[in-house]
Figure 1: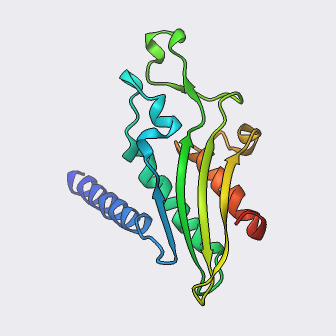
Figure 2: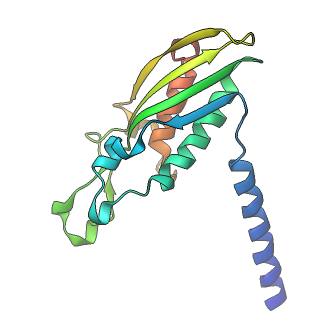
Figure 3: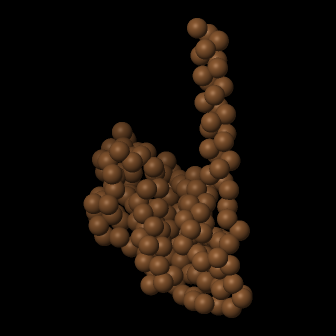
Length: 170
């Protein structure tokens, strides 16, 4: 009994390590950087018990953006993205009492926002398109699944919506 439990635990660790290594693989045709994340809306609203650990959401978001953007590029194209602001979906509502100190309340009045600048390069290195985008989704709650427990699901959805627009989005 103990040895089968140990084997199961070992298999779970190997699977987690493999998944983590896969998730951290970044494409070489997309670069994502953050412009002064200490001044992001999310960081400015972060204090006390609500102090946001930027590495807890910015690094996974960076990896997600790079991996998803890589899929929409034509061969030889390169994309540089600079995220200039992030405001995650939801807010803390301190008036609810101490039992809710670490609970982010998700309502339609607290939509996710991501602002970014981008430059798309062709295979020849010439700039094909560049610009700024303010990603917003007022209907973000209607697009999510109640079983999705990813803490960045709303922000990732914003990225997916932008990238799905193709040439109009980029």
